[in-house]
Length: 57
Image (cartoon, rainbow, N blue to C red):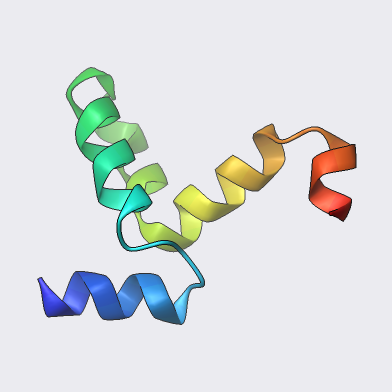
């Protein structure tokens, strides 16, 4: 558990939000896309999903 929390912090990812989102989505995710749930990939995908005006804030 400490490793996951530390990895989140090193990647500037909220260690409470990330696992909750991953657990909610992982069952429906195909195996070839599991890498998207790694904290650094997950963060990039969430940033890409945000509208441009929210990214500037």
